[in-house]
Image (cartoon, rainbow, N blue to C red; front, side):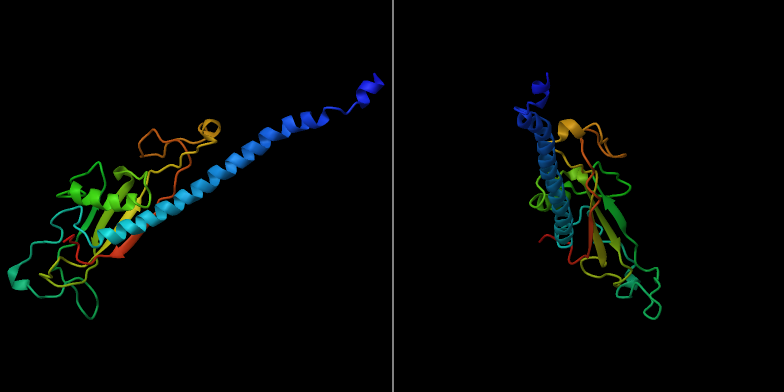
Length: 207
């Protein structure tokens, strides 16, 4: 019995059997975590690319660059130069377009223009879907009545409701994560932060 207790043959195999699953879990977890950070970077760059393209392309809400003015006011500035306060002569635009489209928030929605912007973003982040994207147009209060190409605006492209999809740890970690509130079900994984990029509009016209 003493000889059996002191026998160490096969100990390495037992130790390897205990340690190997832990090593594999750590290695695969490191790969998944690193890829998650890579997707975060992709999402951030996609938001900037979307804002850059949206600033020089047709708006997702058609006609916001062609507001109605009173003819006698043509040429008058939209703000008091000395104070920066609005003169009330220019319309205020605050439009957010995101599928499924709420007509009240995005009047005259143009799916063609919206999808063209999303297509540019997908070149950076291929698995991005239209329902992950919001595009917001807001007037800055500058400009003058009748300004060609519409009033100056800021264009904000925002990504939301995207969850990273684990590959190696999916079966082990899926129970930890639940779909983000207000987002479509079906995605399992840690949520990717809401990235947004805001730029000043240029001509807001594709051609």
